[in-house]
Image 1: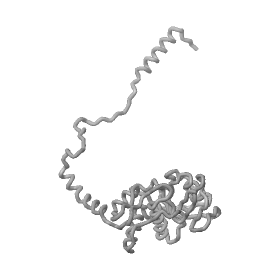
Image 2: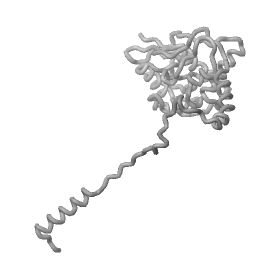
Image 3: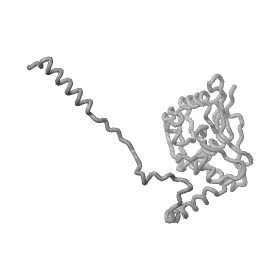
Image 4: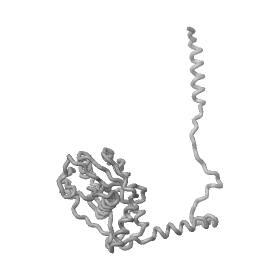
Length: 252
């Protein structure tokens, strides 16, 4: 084995340092060509050919969005603890899923954050429902064990963001007590079915424990379409769109 002299060692070291220091660091960057830097605002004239192509589709979409499908005597909105809008959506999830699957469903479930708009007082349009539910969420039915249902109510007591149909409970010191499902005391030895969006079923809004579901079934409809269908059914029956805060969740 050959050993370098001290002078040769420092010469090599300086060479390596210079080599490394000369390495250029490449950083990707995106730049528009000057001719492409055109601000899009009212001063830019519409392209006539593009407008002509888009016009029929725009007319069809606007006609659909402005279609009146129901009437609400009062505004429904999402609020903490329990809300008229949360109760309305949780109820229709359960009833629509039950009709599509042909059997009763124990509960409906929605979170406050999943409701992005209100149901306005007066005319309700298809566009209102698209604003309320802008996501392409599917309506599912989960079968949950008693232990998972217990986690669900404890989550509801601590976070206070759940809207429930078919169930009531009280919150005391951030703990769920007096849980009733279908008017009967909660039984940890039983399984329960829940109509819910696929987003929440897959753990959205920190509901990761719902992935413990022992069974998952598709209702075969988007949640937005279920809302539209429910409102249209109420209108066909001569009924208004209404819901109340009725003590499903009580804070003691």
